Image 1 (spheres, helix red, strand yellow):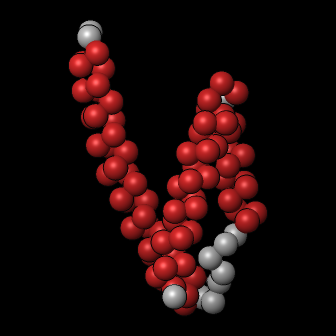
Image 2 (cartoon, helix red, strand yellow; image 1 turned 90 degrees about the horizontal axis):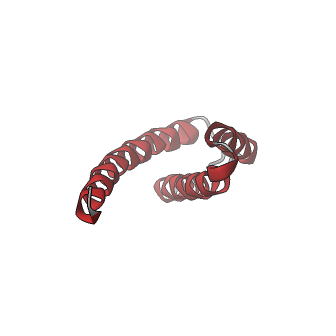
Image 3 (tube, helix red, strand yellow; image 1 turned 135 degrees about the vertical axis):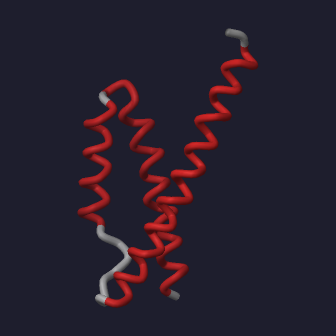
Length: 87
């Protein structure tokens, strides 16, 4: 394989990541509506920390910090989206 082949593989993975990101944000929208109906706060710090700990465990030591940063950003974006919906 040459560099272009690897880039094509990355592009394919990126397309799938975008599809999954959109799906995740759509679920976040549904969660925002649920939280509004049940008068729940957007931030659930315990849930977020539990989620990040499981992610670190799943990917192992070598990639744990990177995966944690990725998911911390996803969680932050989901929270911001929910806050925007609820305002």
